[in-house]
Length: 137
Ligand code: SF4
Image 1 (tube, protein in one colour):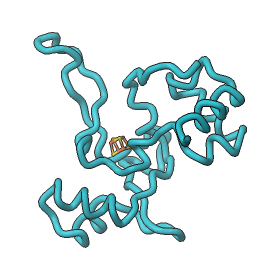
Image 2 (spheres, rainbow, N blue to C red):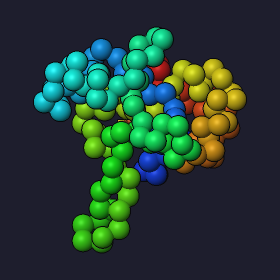
Image 3 (spheres, rainbow, N blue to C red):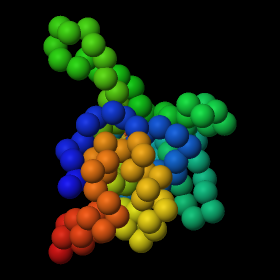
Image 4 (cartoon, protein in one colour):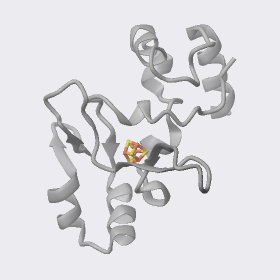
């Protein structure tokens, strides 16, 4: 069973590679009020196959996406929880996580992601693949 998102922010941590397409870049630029080149320089890494989001502390184990911030869990509680500061304009890869082709086709990669993503905790790879295919229909 795939559980609802627990909003742990774990998918925004680590030195993972969150790809950014040209469409994502234009959406981000409009949202941030910056030119596409400024967004590239400030927030993206150039990879062999395109661009990806930069991380804070990229060489440390506590790396996290540059857009990961915090919000109050419930009004007036003072309790904080992780929140995306780019939410409305976040890349397509963030919108579709964890239903990525790579997780469906690569069981080892799936098991790695399952250790930190609360949505996947109760779903073995076969169950995930079935849900992945159902959503693609
Ligand atoms: S853009 Fe937002 S949702 Fe995507 S990895 Fe960064 S903080 Fe997480």
